[in-house]
Amino acid sequence: MCGIIGYIGKEKSLPILIQGLKALEYRGYDSAGVAVFASDTVKVRRSVGQVKELERTLNNDLDIASHLGIGHTRWATHGIPSEENAHPHSDCQNRIFVVHNGIIENYKELKEYLKHRGHHFTSDTDTEIVPHLIEDFLKSNHDFSTALLDALKMIRGAYAFAIIDAKNPNTLYAARFSSPLVIGVGEGENFLASDPSALVGRTKNVIYLKDKELAEITKDNINIINLEKQKTPLEIVQLGLSLEQAQKGNYPHFMLKEIFEGPEVVRSALRGRLKSKENLVKLGGLEQIADKLKGAKRLLILACGTSYYAGLVGEYLFEEIAKIPTEVHFASEFRYRDEPLDQDTVAIAISQSGETADTLAAIRKAKEYGLITLGIINTVGSTIARETNAGVYNHAGPEIGVASTKAFISQLTILVLMASYLSKSNEYSLSNALLQELEAIPEKIKAILDQSSQLEALAEKYKHYDNFLFLGRKYNYPVALEGALKLKEISYIHAEGYGAGEMKHGPIAMISEKFPTMMIIPQNSVSEKMFANLEEIKARKGPVFAIATEGDQNIATLANDVFFVPKTIEPLEPFLTIVPLQLFAYYVGTKRGFDVDKPRNLAKSVTVE
Ligand code: AGP
Image (cartoon, rainbow, N blue to C red; front, side, top):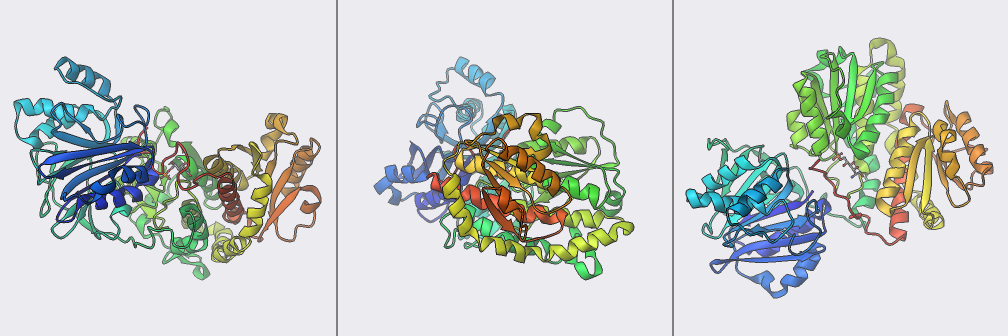
């Protein structure tokens, strides 16, 4: 959940480190720091707050001649955001400098062990044990890489490290286990980053470091070894990322840009995969296991956060379209629950980043039980994508806004394709109607985006409430949950999503003039039930903001405010009912004065448990 950057080469390292850290700030932004090699010593600067605060403190130093450096933007796990706890951390001699993303689970024991051996600590972090551990091994073995390897063998937990050694001014060291780390391959220079988006505009060639690998990087060479000191081949892959994609364009925030990418995101997820006239879905990434998949007796969807809510829509789709019993589990619960798992069950991980620690662990557990594992993943080359047996990439492009929006729309698209792909011949009629209508969805989303100013005005009206209830049924129950999550994440309003049928079993107690309800009430097989719930809320003077279907004459007579969405078939309604909720959350958050791209306490990719 932190961002790591590293550089070795002919350029001045500081400007490159600062620019890279700014691109990684969506991973964590409560403090930052750099260590650069300049005129035979290592200079360190750390500060509390965003990278621009660090840049301000660097001021004239930004220009110093330094060809080697590492940098870090933090999302605190151990120790409050402070200068002492900011990275890099060093050893007693100020020889070794380390930046880290992840959590060292056995840091307390190692810290006690090192204290007994005379080491002094200045921070509350888990990371600080690493430079001291290397320093300790260097006492008995002068080869830096060997000392580093020995230290890595002592560490338990998740890590991505970038390390410099004051006695080795021509080498940048890196190591990873579970947390992501890529090497950017340049001409006479090389880079390190937690995520390729920080390398856009610097290089198109990257190497994804694998678990338990250590890299020794000079400006002209990259040597990768595993923990047994065996050399591993360099697998260089081309980055398909454009600078434009990694930047905001004319939008004030990445979140708004990504919401407006909705129509294009559906098209790119469908590209080359759908021939609706022949009712044909082609998912190349699943072909190698198609028979096993089509024979599946049960599907387990494993995910977290927004991806989990997309999975809940998937549950309805797989059961209604493909007639396969489906369960959706919070990955953080699945990894510790003891449930019967058999080989007729297929596990599907849904993850935008492909690095979420709980989802990765859940998939590894499913593999241990011999289940086929699939991924619906957006980030190409990410760990979950590489560790699942097969899968489908979203092709939604990088999602930089911390609050996931376009990835949700893209995940829905893939789930509809997979449900049709798994549908048996006798359900073709429904899946055919689905695929035909799916091609019309991008235009219908655009129609909603064209009315965004309406939602901005409604956000102005509702921005002062501190509580909000979101209600939906069937396919719109997960939309209620996701809509509430977006408002929580972006505006810090206490918003709760609920199945409307459950309201009478408790939440109705909260209803009052001060507690508005967002009703997701399109015209469909359950709208009558929704209208009954709406009446119950009106009877208790609760303000109601309704998301309804164009042409619905009744709703306006009951709800205080209505936003209309185009008509579509029930299984595809989430595509249209979620977009106004994404926009509503965005406008409420910005009107309450918050930086919606960097919501407090959140990070884009949760790579620790
Ligand atoms: C959603 O807006 C949040 N950023 C968060 O809940 C996110 O969906 C969750 O951490 C899962 O991330 P993933 O899709 O990258 O696995």
